[in-house]
Image (tube, rainbow, N blue to C red; front, side, top):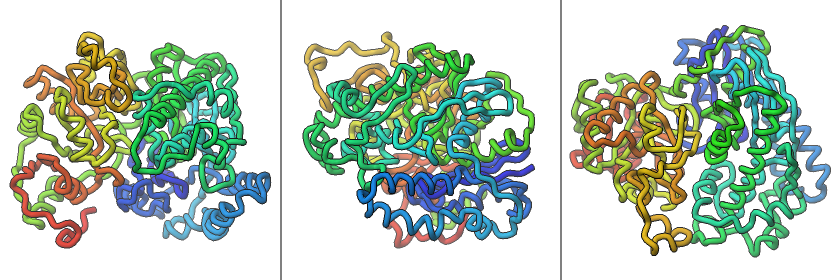
Length: 606
């Protein structure tokens, strides 16, 4: 039984393919089109999934879309009617797209999937999220929390997974949305909604929680069970073209920060405040879910589940014994969840789990390129390289890291989800006090305050971080152990805001945030043996089992997918070396790079 899942038309369109319950492939459309957060119908991602499965569309048994378009359209119409005549411009902008395209999803899918004549199914949005969280998890029983901006009507749900069934028990409906609250502050602090919420999370430790009480007094009413209502008097997103309105601006003392202008202490304090309020809601919700469901395990999905600071607090509070988060927690993961919901819930197939191993395969579910494909690319473009054996490769990379080189790491199958996990990564020496600044400004071309994540060998994590267990998908934050922290001087302790940035805080300063936290990725030999061996070789040379890992892209672009994407990023930035499969490329030996003029692809790599 072969099932194709699709998500599209909001943000991060994606496709996923499962065969007899096994996840064969999954990928976001943006990786192929090179348009970040591409929301269009995922033709390229679907083509990839079918190729990976060796299939034609006619061989699919089911196709499933991740939400119910008619129910979502009902919510949009109802909302505009409630706010009319306010929102007329938003209405006029949205409705033509619905009338022409989104309402006719079944016909659209049938037209795009030539040869497919089977059923097309439509589970609810938050069921797709819940299925993406529970079914790939290692648990036979678990509480499930999904939280995002909005699906059809639901913005938050609490459910329970038992074996092959999911039951949604509680819901919060639009316009009351924790995701929208966070996005409102993302907008007001000058960042891009639906793509830069993680910047607000990264900025929060530089600020003070000065606005927490104001948020609680005016914007959100939080109950003890984690349910909440927003005061829509201050928000514009229900029927307008912006997230916040003039009353919101007046409440916080002025208009929204203009994008790309100087960040001030105000933005830092706002970020810290909304982060603390978000954590308050999530922790209360988690406690209520434990009481309601009485399970020791918790699964999370929805865009808010990418808030790894809040996730870490759930674990540290001991509310649940075990926590599993879908790596593609946002809308992209809905494609996978929808397909799994059909296999287990709709078709009633049995499911087994052992509380240890998940079914996500490290989230390495995207395209991979064989050595002969990469060699063809290198030879066609006459690029100098050195061929390495499997035994040489991790040792050579480790040696280059100890010399403070920055490395582009392109290996194996691409990751599914927003995090680079050691397949499409830029890596560096976590011990270097210069590495964060170099990577941010000269390689990623992004804001200097943005933290980098550590990749750490799974059996060494407790020696460097206050953490027990696994965080293979970089969705958990933990504190750096006190034993490896550096004692700050009295002058350094007095620093405020962004001035905290350049203070060396630990033996691994490149991955230690200003509050001594780090967004962990534990690396496991069974899911990524080459990446594990490379870090182990670095450990043998340096005595440190921790490296810097950030996504292989520059600001504003998706993570690289093809060899040519990796090479372009390598040449546009100050990355020193590129490991492209078995091949090592030295920046100093490369020919002059004239972008887009001489670099149209001479051939297509499938």
